[in-house]
Structures are given as structure tokens and as C-alpha cells.
Length: 351
Ligand SMILES: [Zn+2]
Image 1 (tube, protein in one colour):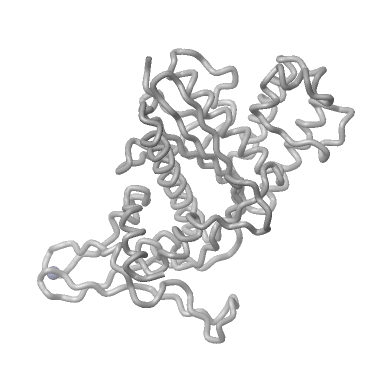
Image 2 (cartoon, rainbow, N blue to C red; image 1 turned 90 degrees about the vertical axis):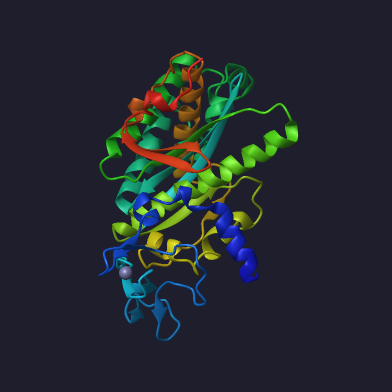
């Protein structure tokens, strides 16, 4: 990849998806000015830990502590990088959902997970909820697909789910929401959402959707990387594949480029607190219980937002899922981050 292309690529992504602490990074100069970190200048050598023998050993890595930049007055100023040594792994699983109303489209992407213990609790929670719904079925033999499970016609036509009533499914979804709430203190749950006006031109609409998805995806991963590595945890991302998955691990080009391709930039180094964060891996749909849980949250978030934007109330309010870090996409240049147990009403367009 040529440096020109990389530069363009990163410049295209722009800083709006960066956490404020990264976007505003800098240091004071003796002259009274503040030197703002040059986040998007391409450095010849990639940032990240350097190992003496080229092995990813825990010890013996050189971690860059600061970068030098020149102030307008000519003085050299040291900008601290605030590296954090890793002490564990943060397992994060993501899935998307989208909905369309008369005038709007809403895109949602949920990322859920935690360290090993939290993952175990979440997995067990889902297993229990599945056993309550269908006591005669081994929970390992079926997966939750919200869109289908919520659809009466689909249930009627299916062999396993035909006896389930609307009420059964509602109780099941409420029980699933409770799994998140029970683990909220220890888990790392983030969801991004963005409303956008739909366009009549099909091509323009397709492009707008693709752009919104890409930038929302970056904002979500950036936020998770910044907060995870800031707490000494290296995130490992497992996302539900957009296309059919044939190889494991399957890494989709756009996602890999956005992370490995940007290690030459200060923005990336500050985001990762001096750590190497592996590119996201893409898994087959519902191939892990946490992907099922991510689907459950994303489905309900998209549904809740869509219903509220047409003046109706969701059957399963998001508050039942407990506290989440919600990233609201205001426009291509701005995201708001709120930690709440529901999306604040000001982010939902009204009919
Ligand atoms: Zn100065």
C-alpha cells in the first residue's frame, strides 16, 4: 500500500470518530501556546511496542513514551503518549441491526463483552434463558435470531418454535435483557446508532448507508479500544460477518485496513495507549453465544429507536438492558458519547 493511499484513507476517515481525549491531545509550550498533537501526519516507522527479538514477549518491549513536536515559536515540545502496559484481554463481540421508517433509516451496532469471568456469566445467562423458553431442547442446538423469533409467521412454520406464543417470546427477550443488566458493573457494553434521512435516489441511498455504517463502525471500535487499553486490557474483536463466512478467521478488508493501515499515525498510537490491538475477526452469524447477545441488543435498540421515532413505545424498553455506553452519531463530523440505561430522547427524531 502506498503512503499516499494510506494517508488519503485515514484522512477520509477523519477525526470525528476519535474520543475527545485523543482528538484534543497536545502539550503546553514554554511560550504559553499549546501544541496540538499532529494526529494525522504519517510517521515512517509504525508506532507500537518494539520487541528485541521480534517475538511478542511480555517483557523486553520498548514502548515509546512521547513524541516531539515543534511549536510555532520554534521550541521542541514533548507530547506524552501515556502508554499502558497490558494485563489482560477484553473479549468483545459485535452485531448490527437496522430499520427504516417513512423518512429515516437507523443503523445500530452493538459490542458486548468483558474479561473471561464476565463472558462466562453472560454465556451461562443465555443458556438459562434458552432453557426457560424451551425446556425440552438442548440450548446448544439452537441459536437466537431475533427477527425470526419475533415473527409469528416464521414461528408457526418452524418445527421447533411453533408452540411459542407472543408472550413466551416477550418473556424470553426480557430475560435476555436482564442478563445484560446483571453483568453491567463488570461488562464492557457499547452501542452506536445513527439516524439519517433516507434519499429517494437508490444509488445515493446505498452510498449514504455504506458511509454511515463505516464511520459508525470506526467510532465504536475506537471507543472500545481507547477505554479498553486505558484500563490495561487489549480488546479482541469478534464481529458477525456481513457476508457469508467461508474461512476462519475471516477478516474483511475494510476493517483490517482501518486498523493495521493506521499504525503510522499518532491518532492510532494514542487510541491504543501504546499497545498493539489485533484487527477484528469476523465470525459466522450466531456462532458464539455473545454474538447472539449482541444480536439481541442491537435488534431491540434498532426497534426501540424506530418505534419511538414514530411516536410509539417499544415492548422491551432499553432500560431493561441496564447501563450501556451509547454513541450517538450526530453527523459525519460528530459523535456524542453517553453512559445511560437508555438512549436520551434528544437523539431520537420525532414524527
Ligand atoms: Zn512555543
